[in-house]
Image (cartoon, rainbow, N blue to C red; front, top):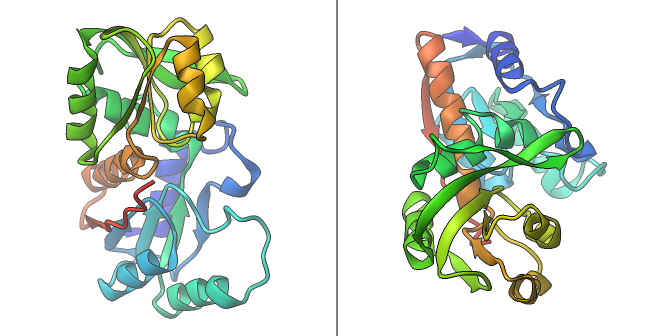
Length: 253
């Protein structure tokens, strides 16, 4: 068993929560406290009502997510917002969220976990500057494009969508999990020939064709299940008496 403060302090330190930039609505760290003790941890991608309901049903003390409670900005405490908070507080469920800090961490991060899962973790290096940090990872590849798509699908357990705008043989790939498809023009300028991300706007497909770069969409949800699991494993390895479970709630996006 550990306290919420102990777990949060450790995660904040590992992920550099107070140093890594993010969007204002991310509000990384503890978003909702509980009475203080944690034995059972639930992890998921989104702090949505079905996930909170399942976390409460399994008796979790802490829910860890990548997308927290406040992505829609300031809202009145009514409707779904009220139901989520009421349910969590009635069941003494704390909620901890980590967004960009959990994308870019060199070991626990979604980028690192995904690129390692497709076989290029050892050769990966940071790329794509954003607000003073490197938002993604790139690696020399040297394999056929279709083989890479299969590796991505194997890692995520989800079908990938390919825009075959670049070469059939992938020499240099880049990874930014989540929704980085709108950055395709800037990504192409970095010199990579294949970009793996979760999703993007409709126009990104034709833009990739015109720019001569392969674009692989692995799914926003599917590419961001890795980090919360890795964080939970890290906690369990550092603190006694903890257990964790992943709550699957795919969006198909």
